[in-house]
Length: 251
Image (tube, rainbow, N blue to C red; front, side, top):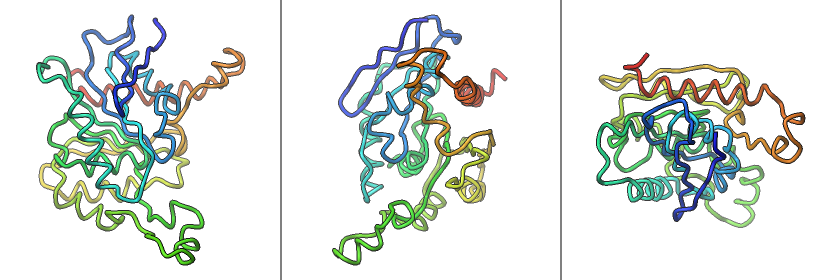
């Protein structure tokens, strides 16, 4: 299999399906948003997961950003970047368009201005919707001292309310890792399943909040002997689950 060749396209990092991939024809398109500060360099922070998907025939586009307090604005920005990068001549046979998020990235996909309509489904890994004070250590203390804004927009409560009221994508796969103390997937699941015609499901896998974020740097720098094979197995299991869920007609 050829090595992955990432390329920059504005705020997006792109990766074509790897030659010799196990899925022919192309599986579809993944639009990925990472979590917190890992998302500034998704081609590094999430290298193993995204390249594992490319090995299964997916074209990958990952949005690079630094989190701020205005999550709605960032959700709009990500959505515009993905929309502008899509091929207007693409045919339905080119495969599904799958939105994939990790942690905060799940929230940004849920807040997309098209309310989830222009995709085939969302895979939300380790959904996190904590308040700013919970997410940013010492924020409350500094906020009181310097008098700056202390909450995300929309807030955690407003986010779930907006999802309940406006989000229209019925197909969602929420992935929760069993040792993840930051995960709030069950709360999101309850909100989504209250909607008419909802088809959301929850998948639990071994791992923790950082399981999707694996760069494989030890292997790159020191060779196969320095790698942890269990980490790659976790990533492969996750990418297989994503690919299998995305095309249920083949299951």
